[in-house]
Length: 275
Image 1 (cartoon, rainbow, N blue to C red):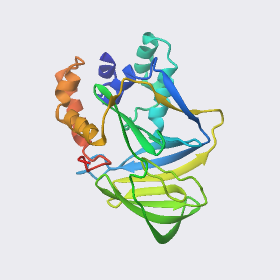
Image 2 (cartoon, rainbow, N blue to C red):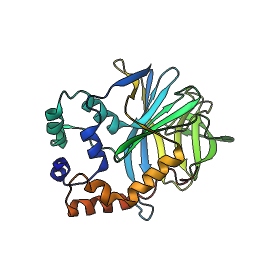
Image 3 (cartoon, one colour):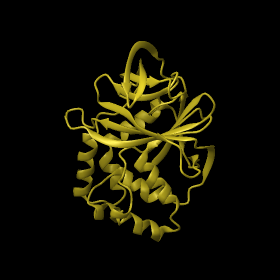
């Protein structure tokens, strides 16, 4: 993986891009009717104060939606357009010619299969997939209202993943969906944050695609698992980072850089790792 040495920074997602989207078959789930973009502000290091930002996107079809990182989506599409291994190498070694690498590598499919959420992600060296009930978040609707991004919104709260979440949804946008795994409210979630403000999603725009797009699910050799077992795999990777990336032939210095980077990523969106 000399690509990472050239970039000078170990990022697990770089390894993924070097071995993922090329030559992967997909299943088309739905045409995309609307694209909703969110700005995510998040605190990656629970001991720090500086938040980071990333652009996220929600692809909405008639029955199915998909939520993911915008940059991950762009990289994934670009990888699938590469024709051979040499094209991948050239693409990876010229980061100025490709979208930034994403911090988030998950894809969340809502109402696929019917009534379920399908979550896919990557933990070196495997792709994982698990399902949850679509109604995993049980909302309490409140009477508070506010104008956010030009829309009249109502407040709702729920508890999920070890955090208490506050959502502001608008019936002016009759889409029962929102960022991450959240939805199932009388309107689109325009803003969502946990009560500690470690993760804040805010809608930045909503639009119809200029050309026909599709919500697609990659046909990979997924490790089919449960949420709890996936969390354990993530935690195990964090503890064993040196050995895991050592299998790629990286230098000790580069492996130490990776370990330091992972150690700063200690504030996951789902704090509850047990259920």
